[in-house]
Image 1 (cartoon, rainbow, N blue to C red):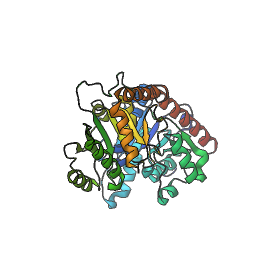
Image 2: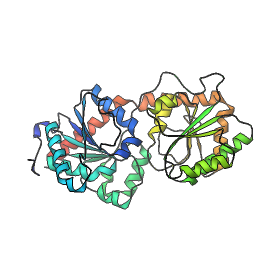
Image 3: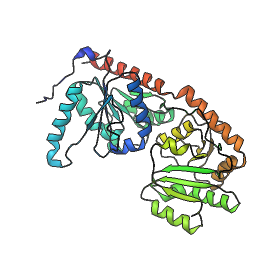
Image 4: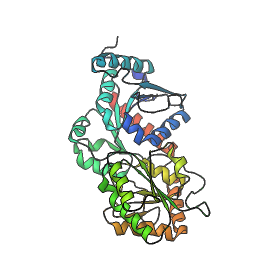
Length: 372
């Protein structure tokens, strides 16, 4: 039986890297593409990796033959807490990790417990700057590094979590970029826009929907797909029918892979900011569709009138004008989409993401074992 002082041999501390990734269902669903690219990157570089996920995570168990997947908890009953934990630790012990990577803050307590049990360092990926007081308390100690996907999130995270600010590291999220640009590439097809949203509040989407309504009134022809689900979906549907947008705006569940969906669209719209990294926007840029986004977004690669057109998310006229730019000037839309693709090729490659992450792993392991 495992004991609390179980350790991994120190010979693997700094030279051999065996990451154990721990995540939750919601994070995997939101950040499926970045995680998928990370696992592919590990496989490409022959990095042994194991990932711990809940049974309902919808991750493909047989998709990565070189990645070991542990489902936790096995039994979803409070009475089986001890059995679940012992089973997890037994499986982790067989893998022999040298570092724990907590992907998303929800599983921070579990990641720290595993790291403590095996006496190995723990790093955290924080995809959002917005954290509740409970989450801030959970992540205030126990980590060797905190990784953020953009400089804007890194700065916000440091300001709100000054205690761990020295541990914050920024790594560009890697993606693959299509050879072709999808934006307005299909002759004779009505322009199409895609929004990927949690539908948390109707107020977040109302200015965008009003801008769409005015574009339709002014004679523009296009289709809009609102992709997602959430508590505000019913209010959104009622509004769409009430203002006569039923033939223009459609609501669809989120589909995977997103890249395949984006390849058939022209414009990606991020109508509101949630202070978290938006992997859907990165996938949209990789597919080569033009991006229209809130000017307060958390993505570093968006430059107004260069790689995207930005707007004020509370100003209907600002949103209207941004969308109108692309609908009136398709060549401009194509140029921004191509510029975004070129930027991603230079700064967001999967290989660079993996290399930078492995460097952080090595530094964290060296510092951790030097202090223990």
